[in-house]
Length: 551
Ligand code: GLC
Image (tube, rainbow, N blue to C red; front, side):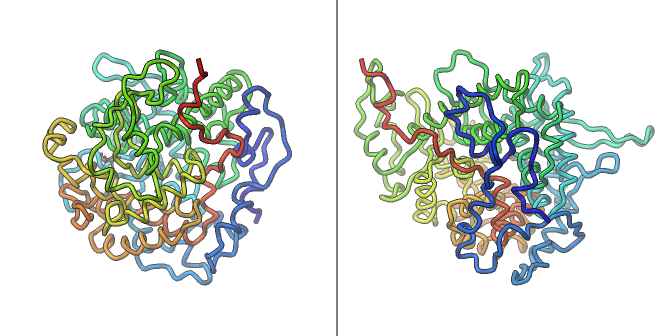
């Protein structure tokens, strides 16, 4: 069996090479066919596995094993699988959806305890990601390939909300398989937001699709899928929605409310970190897969420029630590011209009280949102974890995010990993920002609720930063409850102690997220699938006042 990083040899730069691509050079030079370097996996596994006594490296990565009820991990020498893992695999397999005989995804939930199905009987693109990773880590790539192909076909369908047509590149939020008993045929019905509660746009779907295509390619070494004209076109269509030049003065992506995992009104609009981090990761994944021919070359150039601007903007303006908070606290306002330090005219009075107590002397995070006179100081788990995985966060920033998690364990992790955001909105703020949403009351659901699915992202971030012990603590918490509570979708309360008010049971991504976390801890070499190494030559953080030409 070949080591993971050596299989993916293609006619152009391989994935691992492109991960390390020097963006600065890519800006003005055509891509060269370069000698294969050691991939991230190969390079860093010895470092990553330091402290993982039982891990013996990359070369025993799981491949091509068909497992019915036993996760591969149980076959490993020194690894004692938790009994929950077998249960989780069974539950995950029960959620599988088939289309004309092929597995194409997993249902959002298989909850037989309620009649209120809503759209939880569909395959959500974002929900399928942890399922896909679990299958890939277990050497079962078929379902992932079929999912990628089917959703790609769905991208082609006409999408409308009433009389308004959506952009060509939009990927569905979810789809379902309908069986026509008369014609004895399956067909797919997609939802691009046109039937979703609130008619929200799934901006994250396209990004997850690109990220998953890279994960599939990296894991299987099968370049033939990502290199097909269909996949190349799909990537370009998704990105054409985001890369067009227009009125924007910021490289961040302007979004409507409810366009990601938080798919209800929660004040997550404008320039939310959840989308910016996924955008950055998708751009980098696309860069590693796009062929530099025809319009591919132009797309590569656009991506490269955008990555530069985006990383600069995020690392400077979204980053908050003790020092930065103190600077903002002392900001002058109404500064005009290029010399402005407080470029977005953020009013120090808008800093909420909680953040002064919350911020440790060591540690930091990317804030929820930055726009004109607007800084959302809330912490968002997905955005911060994906920032680490995509290397949007510098190594120092990644470490600081982990420090914050350790310092603020009670607030961010509590008794059930992981708070989707912190803190919650209450009272007047809740009324104004959520529109009095009864599902998003304080410390519930998207409003400071605790989501087990986020465990996989936390674990991956811990492994990437070499701090697996943090993930182990979180896994222990999950193992003490999740199975007993029938794998709920989310938990409520300041500590995440209560099963969520309206939480589904047997929520698939809670199940799959647990499996992915366990498999990552057991074999950290899997991290290469969902992690991108830092681009060493990307410019370091520059103090904000230094970014403008001096007059
Ligand atoms: C809820 C969540 C959303 C998820 C869907 C299916 O709407 O907010 O993120 O994709 O359920 O689980």
